[in-house]
Image (cartoon, rainbow, N blue to C red; front, side, top):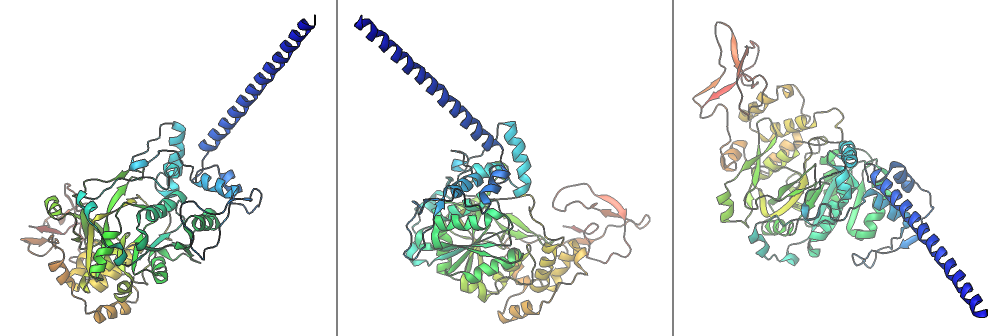
Length: 529
């Protein structure tokens, strides 16, 4: 009888254990399902900076809840002796993740990211306008993503004496830049620059109003990079040109390297530029600029033996010029002269930069400064180059996500460039394209003209004859005929009907303008070659 009772007791006890185990299993499953749904909802409901607006707003608020420090120093670098300890809280970590919710593997090796879910594509389309590139994808790519080696193979064999080349200050200007793009730019420089060459990274915030680019960015930068990354915040909108000048004046390195805030540098990017400047401080060196897709964030490495150099149009715009591929292959590790530069990415000796007049401080916001500096470097004894062993990726955007306050800053800045650095006989070609600027005051040019005299700069004719190795087309030079084609009876003239001159199209007829001054308007001016 006692044996039977003992057996029944054991059966009841085992049954209760089984019931408890089943209850625990289903409870855990319910919790897991709830968490999964929460994570999915959080991932899908993203704002321009990664997470739901309400979540990011709460994390950006000064509320001290959940601010208990959870980590006090980074594991990615050695702290300097005088560096203050930076503490990050759970709230900080949640904010950084919300701003850059990385999806493992996205964009690695510079590969394209293509969204499959319609919900993601819809969200990406909505966010595109905030950065003029795919912010949804950018936010989910690691700030430390891997990139292809875009250089010619021969470049990887070149050994540079990095400890003899001096150090560089990397100056990056931004205004309301997307968090993920900005920090990816910084990390790419940090990870791919030899330590002896990197003096500092200077960020100049041109009056951003995004809250995450203020105290949170400061804490992020101090935590990961210590005192080698500095932020200068401007009290008003200065524009790219003046902001760069402010950053350059604070630079401590022997060389200043200007970068845009949506770039990614590749392996070996800085050494060749520093070496050329070390050889001659008057060398101004640009990297080969590779395209990062604004739609998929793909890094297009392209043919390492083919690249272009800078030129210009008579309308005052930068353009690219092809160089023969066989010429590049003959010396794949040598810098190539370039008549102009794009302007966003280049390296220059700090002292030389100020000796030749830095930037024209009377220029506004953005535009034209690249051609002005290009002409000045060449005409005043310097040399402008593009180095095939230096590659930097850049997100090329179709429009600017910020305003210029209704001003044609590019036009007026270019007008200043033309009036100072072009001879009078060539200025007319600019006004053929920009009749609207003929009666616009360029501002006081006396300081820049005095600089030109003081530096004993050469003429623009010299520049065209000695630097523009591909003959620059000049409308009324070496031509069989130049001018209007007019029907004397109908008073109709051949007209390009406002089409772009660098594309093929059929001509039309339009009434000849009797008051149109000669050589100032291109619609009815033609050259017979």
